[in-house]
Image (cartoon, rainbow, N blue to C red; front, side, top):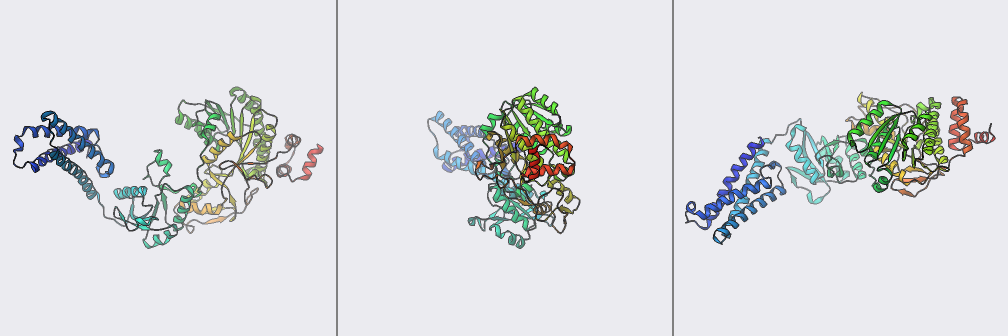
Length: 612
């Protein structure tokens, strides 16, 4: 029914109710009076007729969707009726200096009952008209959580059977709700450990977790238990997303791999970050990469004067440039810069021209096996490139320089990790003699980055497998890209110069478990998608470390941020490396890099000291 027809029908119904209520109210008290010849009564009826429609319009009674009516809509009816009756009382008093209180009280009660009853009848008729008979095509759905969110989800599914779900059961740990029916759906009491038996006993085909108030850790544990049943599990959004209006509580979502990490959000020191970024010129290298682009997105929220997007790949820089321009408009000047950090003169020229206040250095080669086969490229980009950006920042008077590092820089057996450790050393040594505050931030793998295993696993699952994992016992640290980027920015505000900050990555995750979870999240079982073990690739470690044994400090300087005691090598050794690397073959290059990065290659250190 169109809005115009709907409003016309409600106005007609309300008009009949208004006249019926006032005439019946008077008839109950004055049955022998000729009501239609009573001028006082007719004036009162006309007044309440006009007043009702005025207040009904004001409180939106003709625009409300009554099939979803609740206490708020009932309150609006009571307010409109009460004010209408008060208006009649005022007219009566002005006309005869008297108010027929008893007649108006009866009128008020009839008015509220009939207006409310008409709306309830509307809702009941619609429910009856759209009521469907369950069929075999609808998936028997169990909703975990019989609170407000779960109730909303159930009503949404029942009103929209085309979604393919039939709510048959609520599960809630509140014993007071046990045995209740909500929209004819029974509530059963159950703990997490009971989920498997409840699913089997009730032939459940789909599970929806509808408790947005759960912490991320609690949510992750609950979702894992649901997934263990072999039934596809979905969730509703987080409570903060619902409260900010990003999504509706009834927006059912597939479980994402990051939901299983159970990592709680860290509340950032917004004032400190704003002091460092707002109204300033910020440069991000590697701005088109996974981490670099997310750092740009986070920085843009703080309103910098200029945001310089520096990268070597024109397409990736173009994409983040367009995205940011659309998101923030003209609030910040976005400047895309195509440049190779190995081009020293170009980097120095950029720094001299724009004189950024803060530099986030995220550009790097990060792929371990690729760099193992191309060690000189890792040296040129990760070592010489970092040296160029860091020294250019020093020369341009940059206030803060934040280098994005990796857990692979700890005890590295590979060229990539060793080159990143050397990059840290360059930054640490420069911090000793520069007015610029230099700092490095280490963290592990990020979910969804272009170089992570997640995109590879998804592609392998999409074609039916197999999913390839290097070793059943291999573990890695993981966090989401937004969380890593936010903590990198926060760590930059804590810098005093020369620190190596380490992000708390939580517990390491077995790669094979990650693969299994992705298979289940994709709607398959391990019988459907096979997992093959391909063997450890060149340069890979079975597990990663965030700090060496002599670098560990237990104290957090900020939630999820530690400071590692990472001591750099002497300037003499770094100078030697820079002069001699180009003369070495791949084997010599790797031996020198890995040896010095681990500080265990005694022969190499003797060679450096002797100057040979």
